[in-house]
Image 1 (cartoon, rainbow, N blue to C red):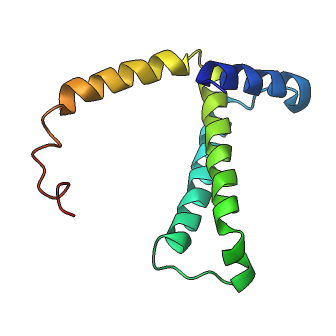
Image 2: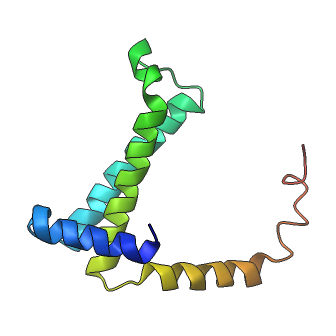
Length: 114
């Protein structure tokens, strides 16, 4: 699925099943909540935080994929309702980063350590 196809699929889902978009402020709050759920799992899978139950550890990677998809869904909702073409926005953002950081990271000794 391309980014454009994802924007269309989310828009169709909202219109067919979701009734309408939540307002932009509500979606921003939901996005923050979803990012927090990703952070919670990252702290447990890759960080030092412990799982509360051993059973939670068994599904953690699947849960992480689902939570990352939740973040993408809400981010696409925000893009759709504010008129952002995510394909074009990402292209422009990568061009900006390429121009700005072309030499920056190559000289970072912390990144060049094994």
